[in-house]
Amino acid sequence: MKQAICGADCASCPKKDTCPGCAATGGRPFGGTCVAAEYIKAGGQKHYAAFKKQLLTEVNRVLEAHDIPEADTLYELPGASVNLAYPIPSGRTVKFLDDSKVYLGCQIEFADMGVCYGVVADTTFILLCAYSVDGSEPELIAYQKR
Image (tube, rainbow, N blue to C red; front, side, top):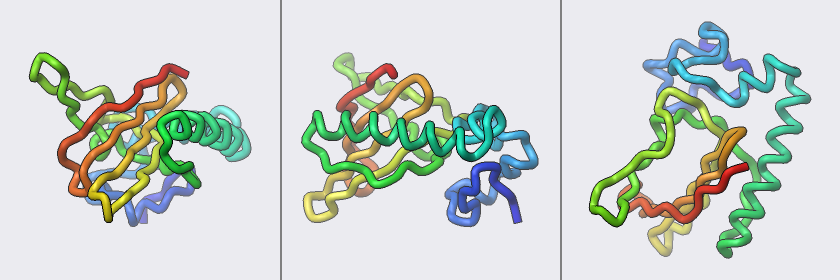
């Protein structure tokens, strides 16, 4: 069984079959940094918990500003699983995240309306987006520097 530095449930990760595990990679399971592992290595679980609590407060301010219900918690998410391609006015699409990193985030789903809101964050930004429940039609709502 793979072990996570942060205590995340590796068995439920969508990348579990290709991930060597963060304990085995020094907190870089996909090659890039993991915000959770970096905080835990620097100051332990309490340091990470304090950061995660502060980040959740900031995320909820962004959600409130867009009339979206608060998030209860943030989860460790592989960049490749949450890195959507957003359409821009030129007709092209742009990805803002790094597939090799691990971010914190959550999804707020309104299945009856066919829409989800996703939040992805790390130490430098908070990204808020909307997309259909099947993950298509992504729309960037906010990208805020922290």
